[in-house]
Image 1 (cartoon, rainbow, N blue to C red):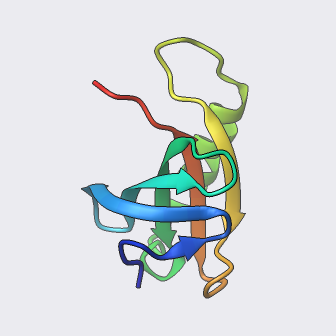
Image 2 (cartoon, helix red, strand yellow):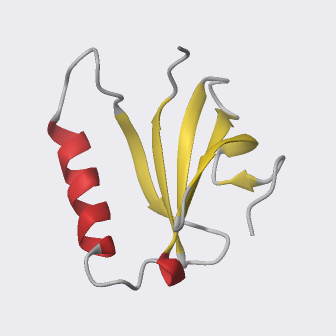
Length: 96
């Protein structure tokens, strides 16, 4: 379970920005640089449907190569230090 104020690696998690069936997106602060990021927290146990892991990997692969001012930039991808069962995708946080 991921809660506000919890640290995942060097990121301190803040409020929830969005939520779906298998993932939650939280505002996070890099405790080293102070920069804000959006952290997508994907629960592997909820992605057991056939194509979901493939779709997640494809999304990560795509974000790695795309460079455009209208597309968020991928910052980091990790398996959670907390439980080893959670993928953490750190992306650029944009205010709109």
